[in-house]
Image 1 (spheres, rainbow, N blue to C red):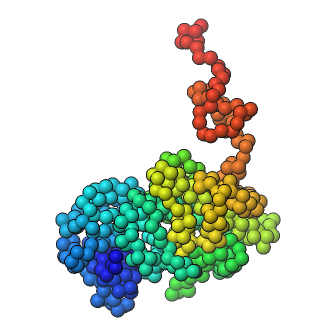
Image 2: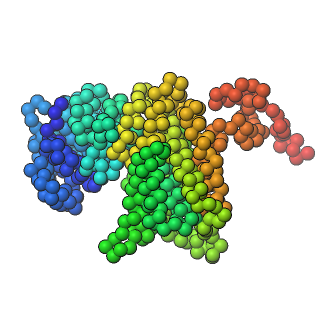
Image 3: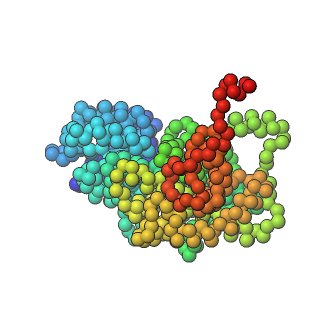
Length: 505
């Protein structure tokens, strides 16, 4: 299917930039947006880029649909709107003008179950609904994002040439898009991407603070370290998007010559104000599917705690000077410690990928999506926030090997070897962070995850005994085979229950 014109619903930072991208490929964007601010911004960008003839505003859904009519050709729409009700409202407004064969691509950060509900609503009418994650921020939306579409095979086949055209390309020129599978798998993959992203961002911000406060490094020096980490093509943190932009952030000054970063308040609100739901959903899915994803979960909770700066200020005042204050690290060789910090960040990044992919694997089994995990990694090669060539290269090697287990990547010799090498560095960094009251929630959780994931002597031995004591929950014997997570065969009557009269006697 050759998409020559498209109906865009929502032209905020992502939708507006994608509209300009489409125009550059000669695709006429007809758009509707209730926001006067968004309309004016897009028209201004269109004028600056000389794409006014390819970007047309419509003040209602009827005229938008009429502009897309072209004989027997299906109309193609794209949503770039907040998650939840706005998509349902948009479908309600469009539905009177839709016909069998029309295609809606929902490029919002939507919950995968909402996507499947809308597919079930529209498919009996012959209308295709594709749940499509779009990653990379508004800069990638302008130049080519990473795209994760999921829906019916017929719909994906029709729009795939269009998606290949507009998607980001990796270093080999391959598009960062794939026909992932049915149902809501596209939005699920994007949700996992964002969970991994939140884990990586938290680990990296902890490393930044360790350098800034713990080692007394100024922004320029930290920017140089990030540039070196990202630029060393022989090492695993090469070509990492978050580290790359981290160098820019450390060095950027305003018109008065002041560092912009210096005046950024320490709060992340996107989760709490519900403008961003994917991080919350990713944590919920790990819990629902009984998949340990502690670095992702702790990172999410850290963001949530940061959001209410006023509450933190109140607690700080209540402590009356007795609160914890990060201090400068003493007794370390700076160069050697920075090497440890590099390895600690790498270990945490790799662990974030592993945890997210484990959740995705379990959901894939549950829903029978038949995902190709090599395709998923291809999406993350470029145009997305978690782009990290060294990590993805490693994971691709693992997924292409015969002996890998999608549910247990830690059990693969290659990954086990990488984490074993980085463990001493991660441990040293976490110990120093704890000693000098530096924040290391994601880094320390990654350390603990590594420790307990491969341990055969966990303190849960005692917890299991207590559960059996008061709840008769049963337990396995150490002399038996380790076995799968199923109820044990043994119960011990630690303290027989007594009747009321007997107790009173």
